[in-house]
Image 1 (cartoon, rainbow, N blue to C red):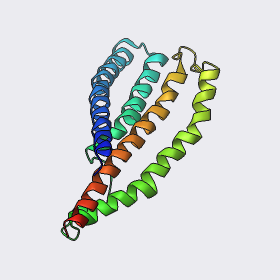
Image 2: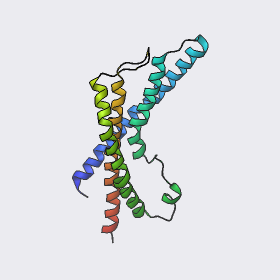
Image 3: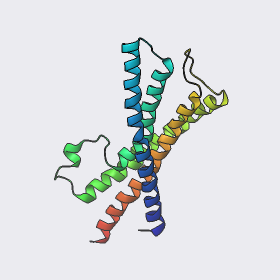
Image 4: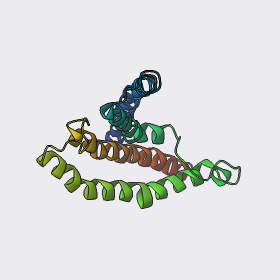
Length: 175
């Protein structure tokens, strides 16, 4: 396979590993925040809209920015009964991944990126904040995670496409 494609695949994989491991620290922050919030509400009868919104925002960041990492490590949902069975060989699995990436993953990521762009742009344009009293400012930052998350997922889809295409082509060349 082309050395440039191999280089691209490795660079995308490295970016995905870095972003996934970095975002994983948000789990600890989210757990600590929830423990603090629950403690304050039930023991001291003191709640905070900002804390609850921050919990939602951290969860959204975990989900959106962790999608690419999950995809890279094959943690996404699929019908494993067929895919992992002995009915399919490695080349057939690679074909399924190539087709799934081209027909479903990439178009879906592009659709989300194109349709969410105006949503995010307007949020930045108006410096959107929380509509709730005591809520968090800078809501436009969390909305930007849509673009970053699906951009990372699209990039990882490209790396997976290259990886599976290599399997398909290597098997064909071996014949």
